[in-house]
Length: 181
Ligand SMILES: [Zn+2]
Ligand SMILES: [Zn+2]
Image 1 (cartoon, rainbow, N blue to C red):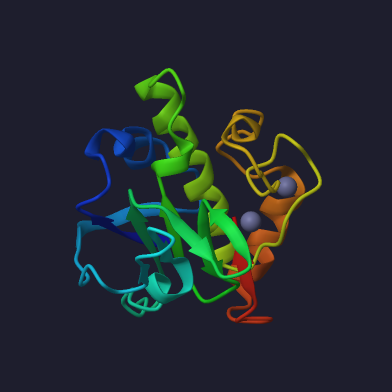
Image 2: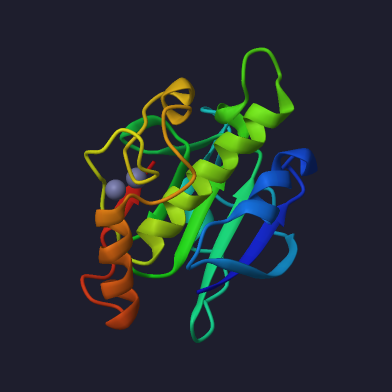
């Protein structure tokens, strides 16, 4: 499936390295372009965070056979949660991810890139209809801390991969459920 990457100016460009070169099949990046939205969209001045769902809604509608992935470097939240790494609408082929909370404490750029890659694989999985996976090494496993992302591979386990093939063969079923993280 073709992936259209939109990167907001808040995203440190260096975090994109592995995402651009190592996205696993069946995904391949075919477009990469800047993403602009007004500063006030989704921004809560009291929380100093942006509402992930409101930002997700500003992403362009995916074209035929395409998924859209929005990348930001700002802090995301949902009203019921302190923060989220990202958000996607199950099966709607739109995903959103922030690099901010994935930054390693020691600033290791390669580790940061890897975390962005793993969570991009995670959000793209949701975007085409995958749910969370119990296998700790699978990209679709749910992570609540950045260190937990390091236990995952930037790839889908065999079970998720076969489900992915089935989903891509029958588009759009079970669409619309909200998936955080
Ligand atoms: Zn899995
Ligand atoms: Zn998730």
